[in-house]
Image 1 (cartoon, chains in turn cyan, orange):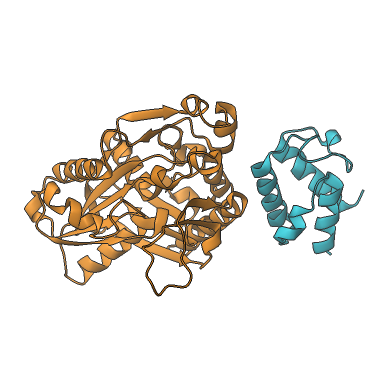
Image 2 (tube, rainbow over the protein chains, first blue to last red):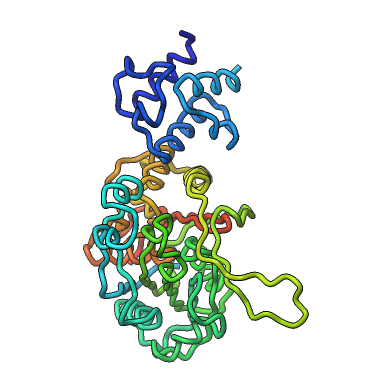
Length: 78
Length: 317
């Protein structure tokens, strides 16, 4: 697991009030982690701040799983 | 400039989340977790003009001034059943005023924008005592067959009387032209010459986009205000934020900093009362003796436009 993924996992766990072990790439952010639509907006804003990146609306519209989020962050945080 | 009197008025009818479930596909848990709102007041037997006069009259009484000592009336209102005349004209006589006035529509940021205008008018010597009235009935432009907007709003009015002083320290206004995030479109009368007639439609809101912009821009306003006044968030005693959504308030606090206790809320009992939210909250805090002389207060609001505004006070009585 990359350093980016490590940091993102910790942030997602903190935001969703879950144990880090529950944050695995295949988990669906909404169905498995229990995020509602505002949780997801809050989470994407938190990740943008922490990684100093800016996602587009199209980017976030396609995110379903934790793995999708990791990919998105890695794409911008290069 | 300083505030020497406040007043507020809410409609008598309280509508809880549970009440809404009788005709909307929603429930208390859904509304509370997404917005923090538990109840709101809605106009029913009274109208906007009644609560406007009540709030304004209370503010004047609290100021110790007579109505004829008010030099100017500034009214913030997004919409009411009169397109013309302005709300200031309609309520002026009932409040007992004889001064001139004007209406502004800067959506939910109207109160902070009105403060900026009042400050400018005093500095230019146009007025010494100014009444700002924020009176809103946003429940009248929601689609009550859908839950998206109708659960969010409440009606209400808040007013302040301002006079000369040194409490009002700074103000920052922001405008980003983006109608589509939040708008209410009224139909106008068709003419024989107009080829494209626009039918009005109830409030349209892109919730996620509004949430993101509101948090980002409000935090930017506040941080800019603090920076140019050599202040840290720890120096501020109260952050009085527009009461649109508890989670927007939390989002701004997460960026700006400071404990929850410095970010009071009234949204749980009144919903989003548009530009009236901050003056209503201020009135309640002053009535409860929560605000002390010398305290530093930031007010911040955002709304349709997109607009946002923030101001800084060092409180004087």
